[in-house]
Length: 428
Image (tube, rainbow, N blue to C red; front, side, top):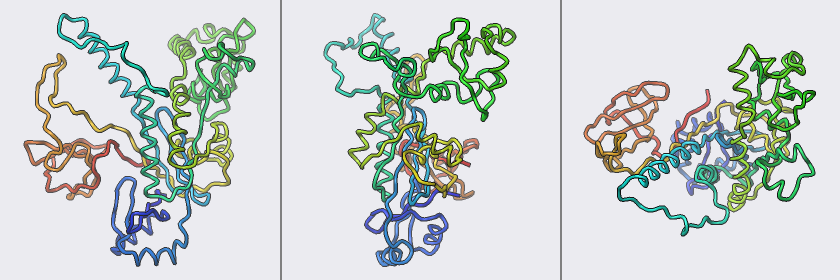
């Protein structure tokens, strides 16, 4: 089952999404045309057809709920209409890549200031961060989600946005009476201990790696031998491993597996960075979306309860569909759109070697009407792939997902989607 197809009228106003079969019939009969490939949208050609469709097939434009499950690496989107999940998407962020590039730029500046060469002095005293400032790697997540919300509202009749507002609070888990300065100096905020451990240890047994089995909370250093209830001393284990370990010290239990022992000790002390990223952006994200549409918020525990009750698998877009107070849901699609953020590319006019010297000139874009990242159809095979144009040749690099890049003449390529900073795929 594929995603439903978005439909807009002759005035580019959104109508009810329709199944792919109906969209194919309209396209074959010439009553509609492709307006956009990703997300796939068609536009009706005549107002007469539009009124006929409204009178027969879609008497009233039914509003949809846009549901969002924000994550630090992947955010899930789902459109729900009349208790039916008609469209899904998973958006992969590039916050980690932004962080690496900022660190690399900072290292280059630091080295330049330590050399006996001309440089720009650091400016610390004349800079002030605005209220609500977030690091670029976190701000990117908010801006990307906002972009896609505005994009979907153009093609689908959305009346409200439902979003999961997750909170981790390790301190409240350990000491419900904590408050004041002691609370402000903590690392994370409001989540159940079990949910926290499931996220931290990857939803599998810490000792044997089993998945999809009941997991029990286990003390790494036994409580009977002085171990604490702090989250850093807790992990997850299946019943068999929990019984075998008993009250043995972890060094004794894993004396024949030194690599696993070191891995567990290292991971136990690591903070949950993904949870911290979601926690830092949750308030601002809700504020930004409320400026677009009315927003309804839900909790992570509620989302998990709904998904478990309905028997759905663990997927980001399915989690999004299960946000908030819901009635029974039916999945009308099992092939969500997979979107990966790649950015718009750099503006560097010359490519540099590892020493910082220019080695070639980067031509201005577009090149012969094409940009790197444009999606085109191969006229010879009918495949869709990514184009990387060349300035001195009419043959471009053409890459189909899962295949090696080939050289293809521009006359054999038909542009179907302009570069917009994202790479698209479908879940198989």
